[in-house]
Image 1 (tube, rainbow, N blue to C red):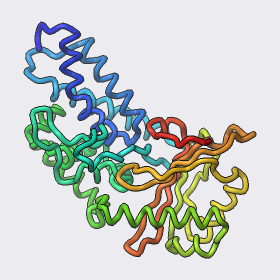
Image 2 (image 1 turned 90 degrees about the horizontal axis):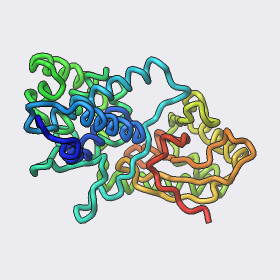
Image 3 (image 1 turned 90 degrees about the vertical axis):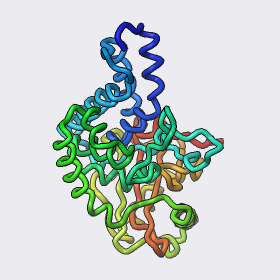
Image 4 (image 1 turned 120 degrees about the vertical axis):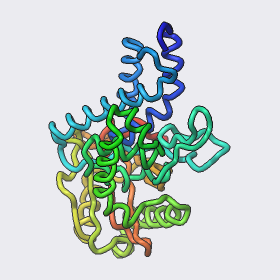
Length: 324
């Protein structure tokens, strides 16, 4: 790399853009943050390109991970208003070889071969997986992603993160132990799960919009939990709403105050169907103008979790349906 101009460095760096973006998205859980981190990684590569390196990938990985770890530390130090949820990611083409694979589900290395490891790539951008990662310390998160998602060897992780191989093994072991609860009931977005999720989502929203309370309640598990991420920017429940009757009452009251959506569309987000909605302009600017509603379902097709994401920054990568 020594002696290369900025143009050559930029070109070499962008060869790895898809990988870096997917890594940063999994590290932070927010697409907009991944955008910023990749741009900052490029800025550092241009300002101070590494010397005597045949490939930029290990160096870029180290820079991106360090930036992401710093970001996670700041987020945890500063706190978050209300429940935190990952930002939705469009994965409509993730399982279609003839179409471009979304950057968050990058599946091929530049020289050929798959990046997939212990966890499937689509699984590793699911809400269940991203929320499970929140229990990990930033270093554990980085090691687990590189080892178990992107299939790095211990030596490759050590080189990318500037750690000893022994330390990589220790951190990896602790990270896997922390993921044990997730591993007992992994969320792999199979076609069957996608169909079950779509049926529950369509049935529930249809019943809710038509006022069929009994049908809506029948699609909820008794211990269903509803989480709403407003980030302190828009009106949202500050704590989880638990129980079928409470969740239903909460959603009904919200529709009375906000009104029904003027446009909505089911899209494939983070491996599973989710509802993207657009609302009419409200007099109160604290009401969200658009939202994503997603659900988790059990084996019987009942909804166990409802996640609503409302903030503009979290929805920056979502395609909104036309309100006309």
